[in-house]
Image (cartoon, rainbow, N blue to C red; front, side, top):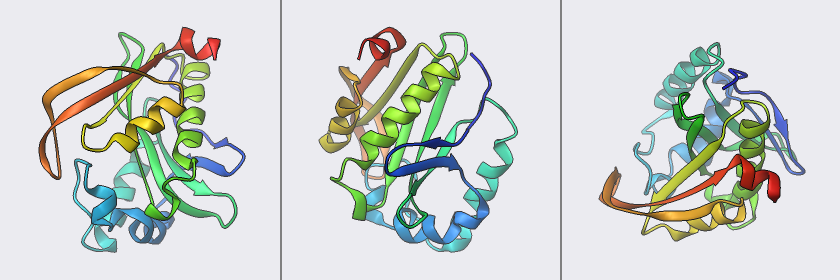
Length: 185
């Protein structure tokens, strides 16, 4: 694995970049305070901007480690930060990463998250030298699985009652893609 860290990535509609504390208002307003966005996540909706600022301060301090990958998803049209995508688990021994993502409801159903996910997958394979990328979703949130499929990930299976989110214990539906499969797309 190459410890290249969170670098700027551009797509047609997005800029993926490291978070700054200056993103507090966008993050809080656009998704972190929305209980519908956090419904299937492992962290609760933020009660106020102070919580968001504390989270962003922690994230900003981690960027010095080249093994930390956490992108702000910025909408190019107005430079608003509308979501996040990050490596939530990294296994250097097997050159594998598990990803997590969330985004403002205002952008759901517009192909934004598959666009961001594809960009991050490509970056992690091409720049960080990873071999396997996976992600999971609550079985009750199939739209997240569609995001993974649109990004080229394949269904691996269901880990029954293996996860816990804001709704309680849940079945995790896992998808993954290997570097060799990515290169063949």
